[in-house]
Image (cartoon, rainbow, N blue to C red; front, side, top):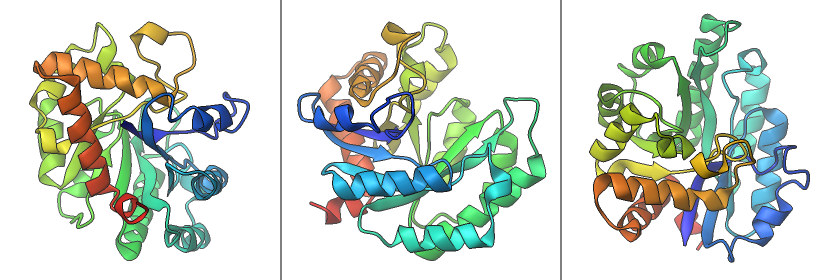
Length: 258
């Protein structure tokens, strides 16, 4: 049974709020799915899905696309949600400079505010970093992460991965690892210590190579597992066991729910 450590079940692309995916979890060999919030509304949806469905867990946070929405009032709302039994992390938040229109200072302010929240509620952090490794380094180098965190859908260098691991982070791989042109990412996947490795889908985004052009879904986390096993020359079972154990260590509230 697999754990998809990062998915967006509420996304409108599914049309049913993730109901079909959740109904098929046993059939698809999915032990758990972490449903990740990107703003206030989606975070509330994640919490509702988690509280109403076995095997579904939630995070609450604001994606770097929406830094202006990170206000003290919203952080107070997230703090109230964070104490719920099935809210396992704060995130996703971070730095994304892929598009031309972004406010670097606003993103940094939003990251700091959510870091402070995560420290206050003693939950791990889910980081989204795309073309923003330099600012993540500046943010993280002098800060502590006692509850740890995860670099979701990692796309950086070996050196960036090593820095993140030293700061207590896990490195999570998604469908990109299956792409033929993902040579640098493949090298990272070979070298990340097994006890710091996670797998995810980021559904409904970033489908694996065999589903390009279609809709991603949590069952495809098996393909991420298989590709990493191939790259490392080990069995899929070894990757599955390690990533499941790592997910339960990081998202420690999962263990309480069992």
